[in-house]
Each structure stands twice: as C-alpha cells, then as structure tokens.
Amino acid sequence: MAQAKTQNEAKSAAKTQFGYRRHADQDRTGADVAEHPVIVVGAGPVGLSLAIDLAQRGHGVVLLDDADRIGEGSRAICFSKRSLEYWDRLGIGQRMVDKGVVWSVGKIFHGRSQLYQFNLLPEEGHKRPAFINLQQFYAEAYLVDRVGELPAIDLRWRNKVVGLERRNDYVALTVETPDGLYRMHAQHVIACDGARSSLRTMVGAEFSGQMFEDQFLIADVKMTAAFPTERWFWFDPPFHAGRSALLHKQPDDVWRIDLQLNRYADPAVEKQPENVRPRIARMLGHDKFEFEWISLYKFQCRRMDRFIHGQVIFAGDAAHQVSPFGARGANSGLEDAENLAWKLDRVLRKTSPATLLESYHVERSMAADENIRESTRSTDFMAPNSHQEARLRKAVLSLAKETEFGKRMVNAGRLSVPSIYDSPLSTIDADGWTGGPRPGASMPDAPLAGGSAECAFLTDAFIREGKRFTLLVFGNGAAVDVPNGLGLIRIGGEGGLSDPEGLAGIRYDAQPGTAYLLRPDGYVAARFRYPVRTALEQALSRARGLN
Amino acid sequence: MALSTSSNFPKPDEAFRAIVEAHRGLSDEQSADLDAALVLILANHIGDLDVLQEAIALARRRMIDASQQQQQQQ
Image 1: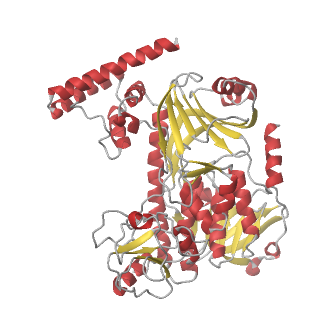
Image 2: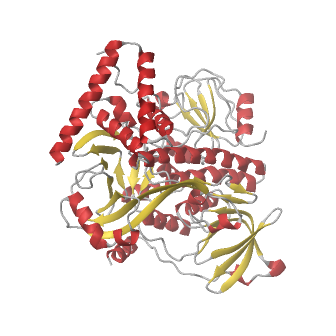
C-alpha cells in the first residue's frame, strides 16, 4: 500500500509509533485513587501543544490518548503564521518551518484562465511566513518529541477515557487500558479529543450546526512536479467540468488535491484508486504519481454552545468544527490552546479566580463563530445550493475578470487569521490611535536590532521576557513605573532595542512614550499614549480577571 | 468612466451573503422577480443614467465573453 509506505518513510524521520506502559496510578483504587491538577484528553496538535504550554508554565500534566500511534493520512496541512508563532513559544517552531513548505501566494482560476492571485503576507519584516504546509503527522511527531523533553508531562498511550463523573470541585475519570480499567481524579479535564469527542457525549453537550451536502474527494499524491509552492484553486476547470479543484504542495513531494464531487456520488465507489486515478491524471496531464491517501468527505460547521462544562473544558475540533477551506480547523484549535494555557496557569496558582476561565469561552466561542461564518460562506460559494446561487456565482466569476469588486467577491477560501476579541479582559482605548493592534488583537511582529542574535524580532523579545504579561514601550518617553512581575520590552531610547527599519513604530502606531500591555498569549490587553502606574495596574487587574 | 468597479464594501463577502440569503427558499421565478425589483431599486438609488448605461454594457459584455468561452470548450 502506498499509504503504509509513506507512514514508514515518516517513521524514519520522526517517531510515530509508541508503546503502552503501565502506570503506578493503575494500581490505586478507592480512597487512594490518583489526583491530578490537569488531565488533557487527546494527543493531537491541540492537546500536545496545550500540555507543553502548561508544563513550560510549571504544571504537571497527564496527557491521555486512546491510540498508540500518530494518526494516518495528512489531515490538516496548512499551519498559519499565528500557529508558528505559538510553536516558537513552545520551542518547536523552527523545526516545523524547516520541514514545512513555506507559502504565501494563492492563485484562482476560472475555466482555463487565471482570475487573479493574492499574497497573504505581502510585507517583509516578520519572523514567520503566512503559512507552511506540513503533514499533520509530522507536526504531531515533533510535538511528541518536545513532550519527551518535559518531565512534567506524563503522556500515556492506549489510555481511553470511558467514564466521566462531574463532582463539585473535581472530575472522576474511568480509563480503559490493555491492562483493564482504572480511575483518576482531576481538578481540570481538558477535552482535546477531536470532532467525534467522546467526552462531549459524556457531559451530554449538543454539537449542532450545518451539514453540507456536496462531497469532496481528498487525495494526497506523490510525484515530482515543477508547480510553484502556491495554493491553486479552480472553478469549473477543463479537467473537472462544472466543479472546483484545489492543488497544494506538502513536504516530501506530496501534493494535496481536493476535487468537489456531486452530492449523490457513492463514497465506496469514488474512493477506489482505479476510479480516482483517471480524475487526477486529467488534472495533472499525466499519471506518473502514487497515492498516499484517498478519502471522501462531507463537511460540517458546528460548535458546542458552551466550551466549559464545570471542570471539563473543550478545545479544538471537540468544541468546534469547520469545513477545511480556510485552514481554520487546526489553527483555531491551537489558538484555543494558547488562550487557555495561561488562564489555567493563573487559576491553578490561585493568582486569578476560576472565573477567568469564562473569558476562554467568551473569546474562543466568538472566534469559532467567526471561523464557522467564514468557512460556511466559502463552502456555499464553492457548492451553490440552488440555481439562483449558481447564477450569482457565475455572475461574480465573470465580473471578476475585469473588475476589482468581482475579484474581491470570489470566495475560494478565506484563510485563517487570528480573531480580534471583544473581551471583558480588554481595556478600551482612552487615547487617540490611527493604527496599531487594538486591545483584543494579537501582537504584530516586527524586526528589531540591538539585542542578542536570538532576539531579531519582536516575537523573539516576547519569548525572552518569559511569555508573561509584558509591557512594550516605545521611544524616549518618561521612564515608566512598571508594576512588579511584568516583562518589559523597550524599543528606542537609551539601552532599548532599536527599530532599524521603523516597522515596529509603524505597526504599533508608536509615538514617544507609547506603551502596549501584552497578555501571556501575545494579545493586546491595553495600550496607552502616556502610561501611568494606576492605569496600568487597572488594566492589568482587568486582564487577569481580578475585577 | 462614471461607473465604479473598485471594491466598495469593506467586507464584500457580507454583501454577497446578503444577496444569497435574500433568495433562500424562493423558486426560480420568484428569484427572477426579486432580482428585477432589486435592479430597479438600486438603479433609482444611483440616479445617474450614464452609470446605469455603463453597468448595463459591462453586464452584457460579460455575457458575450461567457458564451464565447463555452463555444471554445465545445
């Protein structure tokens, strides 16, 4: 099987098979049952990243996974700039970028002709590219390697949660292993167990939304080809008349191909390699390729009403599911992890009240709504629901050839960008601003100089300051009276880092004295033209959920 | 040229979506009826015959392009 071969190749570069090991917790019963502050369920990209983040913040984490190997197929392939910046904070970003295929340009075709192209990161001065493509199993393998460097994480393979009871201030889990069942208690359980989350069923939560009727054939093929590393999308291509197609490069000469099929296609028939081969050969103009993976999908967009059920918190696909056009699945799951980790850290340390966690639900469910809205619109545009919708789309595509407004209305996927939170943790601007990230937005990157070689970008400086609440101060303003325990990044002024190209100043709408209060996840909590101690402390309290 | 073909909506997807949703649940004939009314309402709002003539010319040119492309494909 081509598929088995790929997995073997991957294994040579990254470990994907793991053994079950009996844990001492399994011998503890009754009143002696093990108690843990945090149990994360599901060792996918979200669960692994969250566990690493919590461990780096000094917490012991038990991480359970029902399998003993990294999942097959490539599944997610596009990882966003924001995700890479998060993985930089987890110490694993560079390895992902080194292996991944960097891209920022997409092209849209209609029939035989190109309608337009877009560049998702047209400007210089960012440490990370707009996107990399990387098979999910590589991302997971690298994250597992990182977990191996952190003794605080106890990763248990073939540990399947089969029972969950919510008590007043803890959760009792029943876990099934090759050696039978055992029980554990946790102060917090984080469910990262995917779209078919069994923990979601165990807490009795609904998971409703829209199901799309059209089917999509997803094939990963291996071939050597000279196509550029761009995202190519076709409406009504000559090789697949009346439908849409997508071509995208992954590492190891693997190419992701999505072909829209009709809603009545028989999955069992359509996914047979002998039926897929002629379709792909028509698209590529040759049949010198091998299949790595073939599957047929129908997409759904849905989310849980609440991401928090007492001590059980849901993240990633377990909490929300989107169609894949826009790379909003894995990337939004990683944004969940970075949002949750620092809040859980503070609650576990009792430096913030448990109510701080509610802001995780507020911020990330808002983001989920946005992701669902965007991916629903894209999917509807690709697979119109009625004659009238097909006509409207046809009109847009034909107008796109010569009008800018037509181009802007063509929707072949709106790619993931970090959400801007309307958050109770943000302090509303009191000063005048003409640009820069507003409170609730994520910090833009910019090149810096004057620090160490490892500190060539603002995102590096943020990591060096400890991924905690950090004040970013510009220029020769009056010395800021910084509250205790805050990181400090100074740009300009005596002893500060310099802004060699002036990009940091522009991206933050900076004047002498301008200060941004950054949260531990790199989001802006507040900003000031003339920071004073009392205002800073108020903003800090608010961002920490203390008032 | 009096007609603006630059992108005027801050979020074009929302405008497209609003039109799509206006047609949801309508028969083909009802949709054509809705479109006709929409055209007249928007034309009146624009209130400029030169702009209207240019818009009509663009829409018709697009139809000719599309039919030529279809012939090529056949």
